[in-house]
Length: 198
Image 1 (spheres, rainbow, N blue to C red):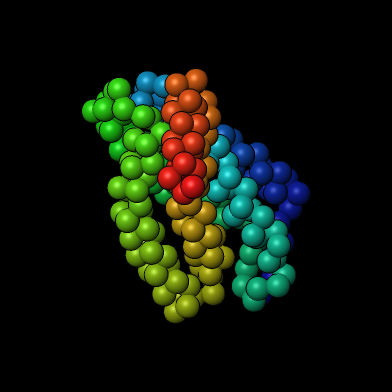
Image 2 (cartoon, rainbow, N blue to C red):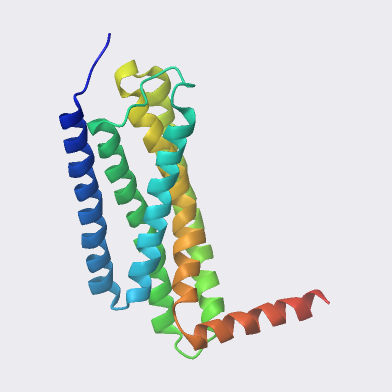
């Protein structure tokens, strides 16, 4: 089977998919800003999503021509990217909800410790959800038809990177942009940990 795509259609696909991805990120930025009331949450979520999109694109660029299935950038791939964005933001919102909830409950406590305990309390939920999703995708990838392998492959990569980006990228960016008190609490927590080790 062979397919050819004219330059006009290709340019149109690039333009429309870029607009779709940028619009979805802007809407998600506004949603997080309205939900949490601070731009730091939105910035962390958007950077984590950009990270996820770039890694999925990088995987397709690296493995194109190596893996024995269709890895073209087409409408199915754009649908996979938008699905990954949705998955990533869902995980990030769960983590941010727990952080906000605990920060509001313990306003005078060490914020770094509160964020750390919030991450620990959402860790099992995040890993269980991601593993369940990944196993289902893997089964579809193994037993599904050749036509959807590229789409499922993109989703599998997106689930893995979306899981750790919500924990290891979005939250540290939230801390980095959240002002002097949170940074001071983080430094104090590090010093206490070093003293305990000594």
